[in-house]
Length: 274
Image (cartoon, rainbow, N blue to C red; front, top):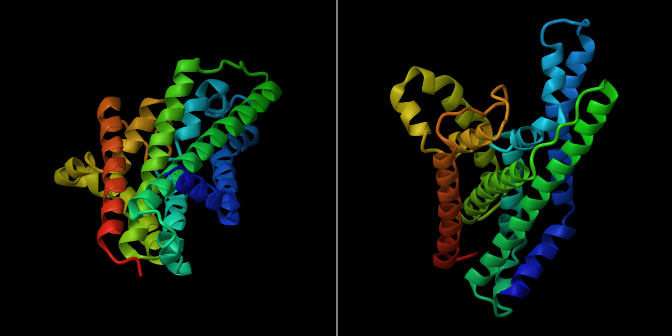
């Protein structure tokens, strides 16, 4: 088992696409969470409405909410792609049969992939928090704003919640890759769900149809958005909304993580890998 874990982790580390996706996640997070609000405040006349609010949004006290606010949709899409690439690339390369003939069982190899994805998603979340902390501190210092940091317990809770959401989308991507035995179609369908269907349900259909609003309360995106909102993510961010309580949101997202992980393992064990 440990050999499979280290082997799969080495694959992720040595694949340039994963580092590129990490860079994209950091740039997107910093741009929409810190740089755009700062640019908007700088471009507004002194004392104009919203200027102070824009600067306040970038303060260190909002580090937790700012760091996990993108995970329900945009950063979550990057996690999904990482999950698809970790599993689906084996089909494109034709390496499943090579790996499995070396001795490990399918579930052992799959468990190694989940371990590697857990490390990768935690790395993305920690990097997002670290770069956000540095950026918010620089902004606060340059603008003469207070540097009130979140409590250590709140910081750990935010990292844990962000890791849970990120790992859920990565496991979703892995399950799609196994179900469709490839990379292109799982990425395409996964992104359509995350970036289009989910937002249409959240912003268009749910306010008009009561049954759609009821259904979306059981979907992973709505609960991920509610979990992020409970920890301070801005409601102006797509996918963020306090639709359910934090406890329900945590349980539902964790439940989907288990379902996606088990479904992927079951499909891999039952179906031909070729």
